[in-house]
Image (cartoon, rainbow, N blue to C red):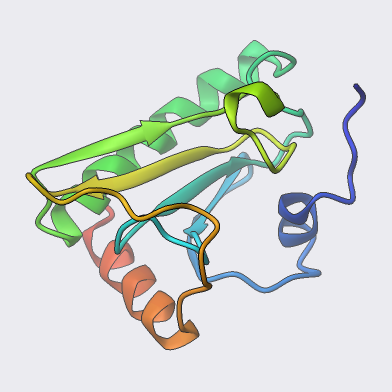
Length: 140
């Protein structure tokens, strides 16, 4: 199936839909998930168009993974997490619902289960506070 540039992440990348940005460079945008599975749930979205990992340009992946790593370290620190889950889905059978390559970075605390994804949207002021905490922890 071809890439559809009307997906929500493409619209966020174009500035058509607002987001709580944490980091942006020429290659990627990092922002908090509006339906987080845990406080601090963050998304790393490459700017290059691809549906997922299966059709992504390897050069894009090479530039994106260091951003995922940096984000994971910042999320872990900002939320004093015991660990970090990094998830990336490919095609509907895997659970992918937005067909633009993206990585979920979710802080984890021992014994605390993840909330279901796709539940209610978090309050904007909470998302803004989470984004600010992560920005402060983000190191070059």
